Length: 164
Ligand code: FES
Image (tube, rainbow, N blue to C red):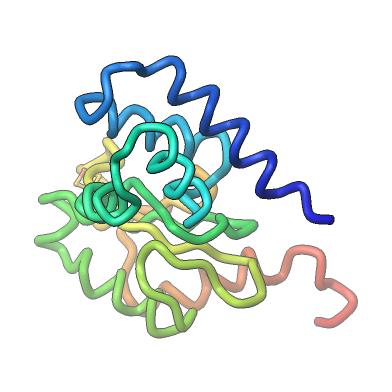
């Protein structure tokens, strides 16, 4: 039997118990659940509903408003494309679209092979290097759509040496 649901239930129960003030704590509750479980699963939102009365559709609606939340398990590598002002004006969205097109996923999703998650973030704190992309925290500066394949190759190649 899968223990995932039991794990989710106990993690959510423990976090909700630390935030007794209901709706006003919804964001921190969602943040802590994501920190513990890696993402917000339908089961975790149902547990919030069972324990607090806040419906899963309300929690989902709130969470989708913020780019920090994800609804699928994280991939092995997390790609964060900066769409803060400095990066955005230098084609941040075009870079997001290129990663999305190449990987076949939307922002907030993980590739079918579980290798990459794609995220859009507000500012990585190194605007002078815009446009910026971070993969597992490693920053790539001055990214263009043409550099996207090379960045992905660097991570795809890991562990597949024999196949190259
Ligand atoms: S806006 Fe992209 S690093 Fe600040």
